[in-house]
Length: 266
Image (cartoon, rainbow, N blue to C red; front, top):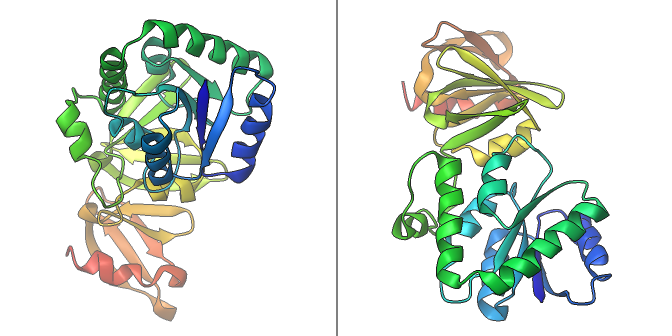
């Protein structure tokens, strides 16, 4: 089987490639650092399986899945560092998924599932299954045309966030988010009066949010521009940002360029 590895982290790509070298029936034909490279390689090489990272800047793993069309759609094995994604959707619809760091046993089990699926699944069924995954993660049915329409030339941003809390996964509409604050490796997502805790970094989350709607005003704070009702000047070039929910935050001088972006909506 020919395989393609897709991950924005060089060490992650190389680590998986080394492990796959021990599989006599797997030939890694390409290693891609982003979704655009992946689609080009898939179109050119027609692999049997792709190991697809979910969290990538710009075009993420879900966007790559949306663009998989044609008679020779490869099998997909998801790779993710965070289990707060809708893992149960992967279990019921995908060939398999792998959590980083990847264990040898889980990799072997995933490859065995790929081997079995390769002999049983036709291209049309594979396409329908991928669309089911997208629908489950986005919280609404998705047609092939809609999935492709979401894959324009510009960057794609998340419309929903899947937040895992124990065995329960909550999908939060990005439009409902009021503000986000961070504490070390955790972020608090405040939406509709509720707070959801998400493990990850502010940088990774910021890359998934539309900069036309969300603005970073502090190293640990992002606000929804649509929820800003006032800007109040403060000393030393700083100012206070007031939201419609009554919360007020200080915009630090490091992010003073955000003032103009916020003022455009007032």
